[in-house]
Image (tube, rainbow, N blue to C red; front, side, top):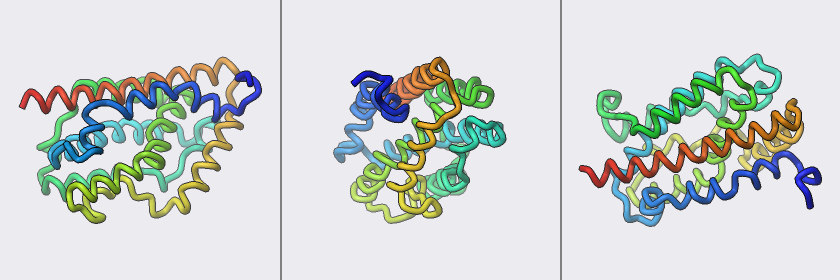
Length: 216
């Protein structure tokens, strides 16, 4: 089957599969998932989410009226209130003064701000990479963090999408929107390329987190 025979959502999935697998297998996350990481490691990850989603959800506001990007935007996906609640629970009221972006996270947030607020295809690439990940592997991460660190709902609010409805149905609808996206072939190829960039940044964030941990 050639790429012209498959849906765009499938082409996007296949076009980023190796990048996705590499990101999932990054050592920092592997340790965290297998129970070799610490509560502090998890908190460091939550802190990086704050900076990523600050940029992404800022771009979301800029894209609300764009005809290509708007179909993907749902207020039920917004993560900033949840990640802030998690950080307050995990670190205390002064959490904002206690978190820092690793270099890769700063570069990732800068990239989102640079392209996603002005290019609807790039916006969808970053939107897809982050939110569909939260709705897929992120749900597994949430259960593991609860188990490893004795958390209940507080501390993993980031992964809870109570207002979204059934997650499988939402993901199916999201993929259907990808298949109908108002981009020509060149625009679709550029979207896949930008999604690969996003996965690359994600992997580098894990590398930087591991490096920062080793330096402590």
